[in-house]
Amino acid sequence: MRDVFISYSRKDKPFVEKLHQALEAQDRDAWVDWDDIPLSAEWWREIQRGIEGANTFVFVMSDDSVRSKVCRDEIDHAVECNKRLVPIVYREDFEMAKLHPRLSQYNWLFFRENDEFEPGLKALLNVIETDLEYVRSHTRILERAIEWQTQKRNESFVLKGDDLLSAEAWLTQGETKEPQPTELQQNYIRASRSTEDATVEAKRILELAVTKAKRVSLLSLLGVGAAVAVAVTVTGIAVSESINVQKGIELEHNGLAMLRLPTHYYRNSDPLIAALKSGREVKALLHKRKYPKSINAYPARIPLLVLRIAVNTGMQQAEFQGIHPKFSTDGRHIITADDTTSRLYDLLGNKLAEFRGAYPKFSPDGKQIITVAKTGSAI
Image (cartoon, rainbow, N blue to C red):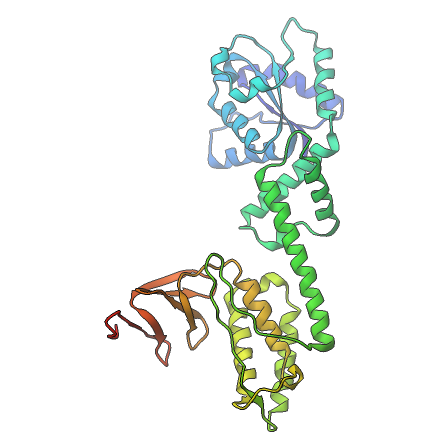
């Protein structure tokens, strides 16, 4: 994290060197791009990181910097990051009409050749020090939010514990302070809270499951945007006296092992398939008689809890179209339909194919799909 990022024209380099030295003498760390290197994607990404990691963005105003495309791009990125902008006037030879529109919204500091340098430096240091802890938090949370975004919003990169509590307090402060939080920062903190709450809930469920899983029901599989009811139904099935106890114990152990995995594990298709397989194996241990009222009659209850967590956690971001979903025999695909069209999805909601006809069914080997046209004929 740097105190200042300085944006300037190379023609003003002698002044920027003087300013940089003065800031360093005051123990202020400034990020300055000194190298005259060819522009490239790597170079620009380094500039972006410099802006993102600085608490204050200083723009040295002159005709050359105002007309510079690179300088304008730097200002644009600083604005996108809601950075605190400090325009300082070194040369007044620029045209106001060409000035970046955001710069006119701030008070300018003057470092012209006929101005005394020390008063200008003192004014700049005062700006840098204003709400310093708040601004530092802005920078820190922004950098972490960008990393989270770059990593495709992986839950491993969210805020946790005291870091999350501090970020939420900072977000409340941001309602009345400048610079205000960016949309990305707000989304990042909300996602962190959602993940934290889900983790706490998962731990609570795990503790209850390990001690005594009394009341577990199979919940419907919910897709965002369109509700999809898919579950292993056990209604009307009674537990046989000849249940394979050893198999039930094995399933319980496997279920407990899966429950101890991180919540984000269930967002992949393999654990969903494993949970569905365990659910089917539990069902296979039951005979088709009237199902006892007590959940304690189940030969293995934890796999059903795993199934509930897996389908609700792993599928909450999936989006399906159609109704009457059906699993393929291998548990790796789902097919849905409306009046005229059937659609094939993987477990994470990615649409793989679309077919004419409704009432789709998988063939016994799972390699073919049969649909029915409005005329009643098979397709």
